Image: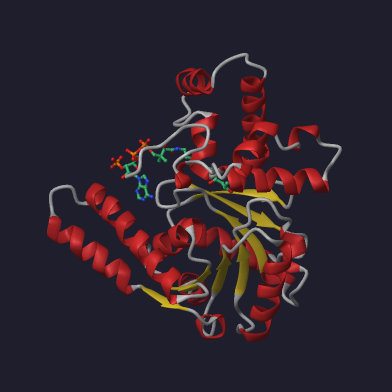
Length: 304
Ligand code: 3HC
């Protein structure tokens, strides 16, 4: 009995201190949900300016969550927001931010070299016990982990945008990931309130492997003039119950990000024609039309 009690309490304490690297859309969302679910979170980015922007975004998102959680009590809402924010600290120095970290989640730019350099440095300054995870949406976890000496304590944690709303977390094992690490990643996902699914280290894991070819088929359908993007979106929403059609979703995720994933995959796997970047996507990106964030993608958005 003693052993059981000890191992359970170590489990919950084991992943209490979380470091999130990268304060963009995904990193902020991950940091927010980790703080909301009782973890001590350090969010890291290269400048204070960027971190302040992340904190503002987290604050706005927390207001939406609080409104839903406590619809009739502004006091409880405020308490929830301030308690969550008190679990979160900001830091521009990775070396300091990982000192007591149990888990580091990387959510920086989708560039293999940059990620490898980051993890190489982290491997030098993080304690032995610290588990490393990448939130990459398209790069092989094995190649990111290659720069470290702790492949047994390495895995993928792939979240979905918007992180506070989307219930899914893909947990990726590489061949070297130990059972202990894997179990801790799964337990962490549950603590975050997510439904976890497990996938091998294959391109796009489960969701993006199916989502990207679906988006590209939709774009090609429009390019052929078979149907308009509006009608394709309506069809997929009302015909299959998706909350957004493929064009709305591409605009929401970002056409630059979407193109980046296609380009990377097609370069690596030229035999996979379903990974070929659709021409219209490249054209829109070359015109600076990245979707909702720039005010125009497949659709035009009114400035808020
Ligand atoms: N933070 C907190 N709450 C948020 C939020 C955020 N950033 N964004 C939306 N919400 C909440 C709203 O407050 C609202 O709450 P309510 O139900 O209490 O009113 C609820 O979510 C619904 O939001 P809205 O009313 O503004 O709008 P919608 O009903 O259209 O929902 C959506 C928005 C949740 C984004 C929904 O359209 C959706 O689920 N879209 C699909 C998203 C998706 O597929 N994401 C995955 C993309 S792929 C990916 O991320 C992988 C990467 O590797 C590319």
